[in-house]
Length: 342
View 1 (cartoon, helix red, strand yellow):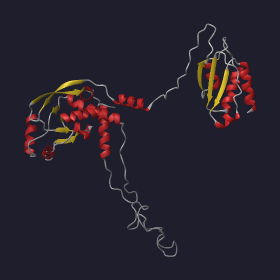
View 2 (view 1 turned 180 degrees about the vertical axis):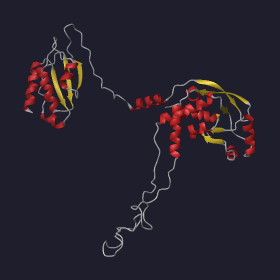
View 3 (view 1 turned 90 degrees about the vertical axis):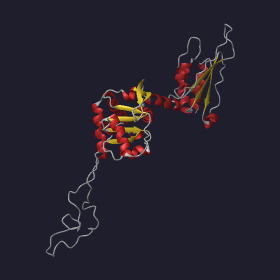
């Protein structure tokens, strides 16, 4: 402590300004009195150290050996370098005017803001998740075939270039997730019993055995039996969404996309729905809507070549499996909301 005080006294004697160290530690504040009482001529500099004694000693040495400017003032950058990174420098002009009569303006160093505020990070994340797109008009029809005006479709969902590699990758991913292995069997270490040797090693004239759960015993474990296996593999969510947009766009480019305003039918009879499908020529179709009407679901249950899916369950394999894609107006709105983000 005495060494530090001597260094600070030496620094105060050489500098034409007054430097008052404001220590953050209570014990150090009581131990180190304010011994730097040099008169302030034109500038008063206050240096606050977050680490008391080590930073104080380092700053004192820097002030004692540092170079001064021509006017005898220590600039903000010099004080910052002397005090180190952990110091906060606040420079203010003294009350005494200069020779020209003008008074110096106060120079305040603003406290730096955090580099990435939470709100800005969330806004940036939401902005990056949105997919840039344009919209185009597409005819809207009823389930009976009557025109109902037009609907705006996003080009980022319905006009994507064909990517066969993505379609194959996602179809294989879906099939691998549905693949089931044969029922596994128990090995000799998994069956119960067999903890002791059935009989002694010698003297019986019988073969040597150590467990009744050996594969050659009745009720024993299976040698080289079937084991459970999973063929699943992962695909990024962005790739899956891009493949779904590509599959929908493929049906659009082939002219096999129909957008209907409503999927309600009069009854649940299969013959009613079959007549509508024959009228449009939809012998193999996938119908997508945000909510599936009960009558439509019952009517489709007896038609093997027509599938009905909620918009939440839209997938690449189901779209490519059927030749015609029929989407309701509510299904289009859901697909826009779900697919117009990465």
